[in-house]
Image (cartoon, rainbow, N blue to C red; front, side):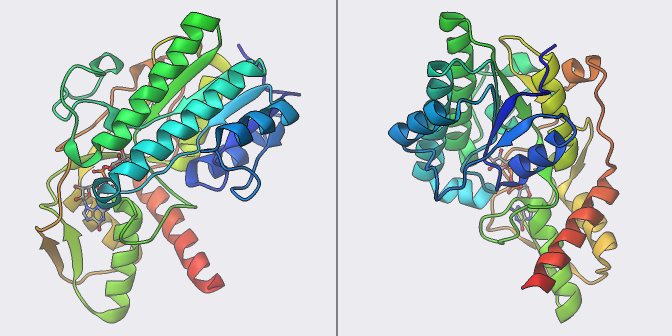
Amino acid sequence: MYALAGKRVFVAGHRGMVGGAIVRRLAEEGCAVLTASRAELDLRDQAAVREWFGRMRPDAVFLAAAKVGGILANDSLPADFLYENMMIEANIIEAAHRVDVEKLLFLGSSCIYPKFAPQPIQEAALLTGPLEPTNEWYAIAKIAGIKLAQAYRRQHGRDFISAMPTNLYGPGDNFDLNSSHVMPALIRKAHEAKRAGTPLTVWGTGSPRREFLFVDDCADACVEIMKRYSEDEHINVGSGSDVTILELTQLVSEVVGFDGEIVQDLSKPDGTPRKLMASDKLRAMGWAPRTPLREGIAASYAWFLEQQRAG
Ligand code: GFB
């Protein structure tokens, strides 16, 4: 058991959806939360990261900073996704080692697994087959992060661990249609189609299956993992069930109140056919998600509307 109470806890990536949710969740832990804005600290800059860690001396680190995006952004910005993510994780993990950080949790993604991994995907499926080409750059960077954490455990005895969340969504998500993931894209498209009385366009065939987890549930799991998990192997963080993109489109349409036509854009990629994770290890720790999909979508839509009103 690693106690967070009284500790100095750095959340790298606090302006992002996941980092923001971890900061919210840490309010219950009685710890001092450290954050650094992009203007204060460029996580891709090794010297700056070392200097910051030397000065701020965190006891624990949630490594939730990353260059992230949906299928199109991943596919069209391969250099950014590979370079930026490798720099961020290498700089933070090495700096954490140098200042004797007691515990570090590195966050990855379910796209680290082979494209055709047996479902539900066990942690042991890592590196057993070829990756999905639309996101292999991001996946390679995240696999390197897992290996870095393991390497520092092995060589230096560090308590550095990794968690792999499934597709996440919620307040703080990116709703930009060119770079977003499917959930915020569908919420925005349904909202705009309802207002304009136009059809809603879904990318690809609509047949891929995805597992979704509400971001505050993920943050809760991350805090539990930080406190109670200390193993070499990464740990999956999923909700345990998945839906097709078409089913998701229907559900989002219901929540948003859109009942118009749904059309397909087959020029856009489908990506991995399915990536449902086996989260048995996490469930065995007694953790379970709290937010049903429909409720999470409603919370996400409410946040989107709030942002729109705020301009
Ligand atoms: O969420 P998403 O962009 O990423 O897309 P991945 C999931 C599925 O939704 C794909 C379909 O089959 C998309 O074709 N889709 C339908 C849409 N309509 C839309 C739309 O309007 N926008 C988007 N974005 N998708 C990413 C990876 O994979 O997921 C990352 O690229 C990362 O590496 C992340 O792992 C969690 O689930 O395919």
